[in-house]
Amino acid sequence: MRTLAPALRKFAFGLTVLFAAGGILFASGYVIEDPGGWLAVLVIAALVVPLAGLAVMAHRSPDRALSWLLVGIGLLVAYMVAGFFVQLIEAPVVPVATLVLAVPAAVIGLGNARRAAELLLLLAAGPLLTVVVRVLGGGDGEGPPLGATLGGSTGVVVLPLLLFAGLFLVAAAAEGHRPADARPGTPAGSPGRR
Image (cartoon, helix red, strand yellow):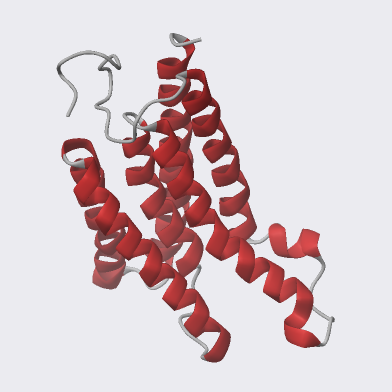
């Protein structure tokens, strides 16, 4: 079972990164089309620069990256809560920001599958709760049907992230009990652990 765990971690990482890259490229295509020009370049840079920076940080210093990811998730949740009270930008900010934060979470998963699963579940929880609130209709019970809401950009992002979190959880279970601070690829009793 222990030889299965690294393969599962890499598989979950690859699926998460491919999915996030596809979603970000899809969103970037719309940004290039409208508004286009230099504004499109700035918006795409606003996606790619934090993604790349957090991914590199997650590879080099997972603990520090974890702190920044939690800050990013907190800001995303604050944005979602504000969206219930004020009409914000007419763009799929929540799904795209969720994809941007999913990549460094997956990078952390290369060394700590359980932590990546926790982060992906946390990332999916906020948008999923907004879907539930929309379905319930804010009190009058006349929200859109669940299928229509999950078929939107938020549902299309959240459901695969839940699947990827499940893959990381299976990888964590396959490697058995391992402390959260164990370095990737280092056996449990070796002197190379922190």
